[in-house]
Image (cartoon, rainbow, N blue to C red):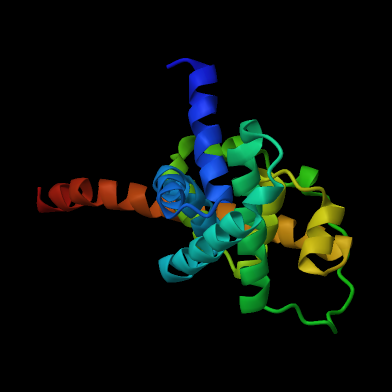
Length: 201
């Protein structure tokens, strides 16, 4: 399909949304909900919470769509707004203790080589991320997937930059420990039938 024609169609939908056209709202929801729901799942610890965040994100999208300057950035703008909505919800669900003792800054570059992830599928990694404690999961997503700087993470989570670095370091270590544990268990289960057969001989 011609890109200009596609943009023209999207521009018409966006304009209709700005005019509060319910049919246009549904078209946007049907087209982009799966992508935005995946973002919500990365941040929230359950599907129920992810669905609530998705609902809130779409309300914000439609309430603020008049601010959109170009349809070329429509999807990126929605993703950014959804990320912010998820972060706000996560912080509300897991409020930061304001009397935390100062935590030493950790250098995430010193963590084990990221090639350790290579043996796992995307689905396995995402499942492991979902099991991280809330704030660790937020720091990991913001830094490793969204590309936030540490000062931005600190500002969004209302914590110190040193604590933001600590959260990411711990998140990476917990993630790798979880993946390696799953990997060892899978190998153990695969080898078990062979051991039982050998014992029968």
